Length: 196
Image 1 (cartoon, rainbow, N blue to C red):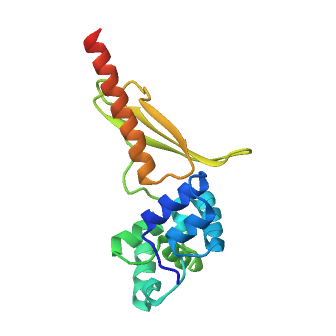
Image 2 (cartoon, rainbow, N blue to C red):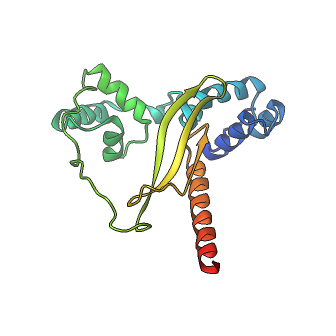
Image 3 (tube, rainbow, N blue to C red):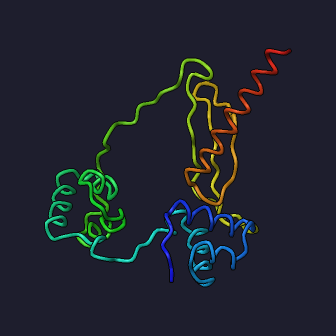
């Protein structure tokens, strides 16, 4: 029987399989699924990241009622800048953003993003180390390696990069890894400065 594992657990196991840390047999055993399903998971994960591991099958829980559909369409028409994800979150719907997007597409409303929620404001921290930010470069396809994402931390004032690494997915754990490396490297530098 296929026991559905939480998305974080699926991501960790499939990531380990893709990186060669687990065999297909062992991954299937841990996920409680067939080896064929593991192969499908791996392909979806490499192509779409963690979103490829979500269950997009339509059950009643993932369907929109007629009233919800009307509300979504009206909200989009009132505020054309709203994205499918913004609408889903605003209405607190329990469906995937893709479900909302498909409805908007069927109504011919997907390209009406004429206004931003907030204007773009240029900002720069006044001093080094006053603020760091995380940046994820969109997926890049490498001929021999496959699809990778560059995750890095950046000092907002100096643009110095304390840490950065390529990953096969842009999941939270990968972001946390880069944060840890940034903080660990910064502490190591501070200790060297203090002893020097």
